[in-house]
Amino acid sequence: MQFQKDDIREKILAASRETFLTQGYGKASMREIAKKAGINTSNVYNYFKSKEELFYAITDPVFHHLANLRKEVFEYKANKDFKNENFMQQFTEFVPSAMFEMVKKYRKELLLIMDSSKGTKYEPLKKMVVTTMETNFTENIISQENKELLQDSFLMHILAMNLIEGILEITRNYKNDKWVKSNIDSLMKYHIRGMVQFFT
Image (cartoon, rainbow, N blue to C red; front, side):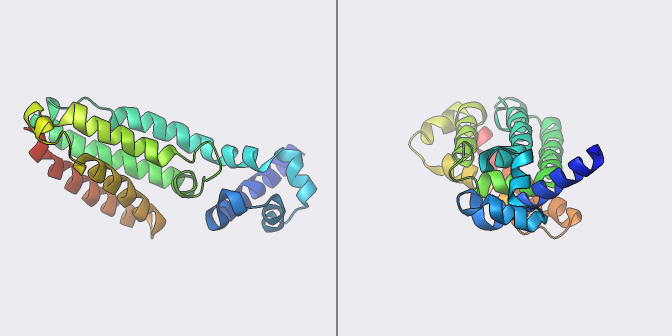
């Protein structure tokens, strides 16, 4: 029956999330995944041809979500709009909300793609996100005067890295949705307001 097949597939995916999170992609095995799912190893291969295919079945959705979010938030050309108080208020509400919804929907998948993807096509993703954000801070947000002052500065890299790691640390220490939302709100408002000094 189709219901039974879907049920087994979901058991495999659930077992895989836990195995990849605790062991990382490289050390995880199809045998361990099958054991956690309570099925034979050969049966796992009936649903997924390889460990790589299984990993991407879990992580591809959060990658596409993150790619869209990056365009909306981290590649925004904001050096004029950020001087507008109405825009600042909307932005400081929109960004934390968007980040919270991503963590709420893809908490484990986000940690997999950022922390446990060594040996996969997503291994360099965290670095790419930080670089994109750093470039955006430098080219699209800070004023020309500050851009010249910060030309050889490592500060934009540090700010980008701290923001990404902050969100991931909140995700790693998840207690409940309310706790996550409160901490993401505080982190994002602190970060955005702290960047204001570079806008003018």
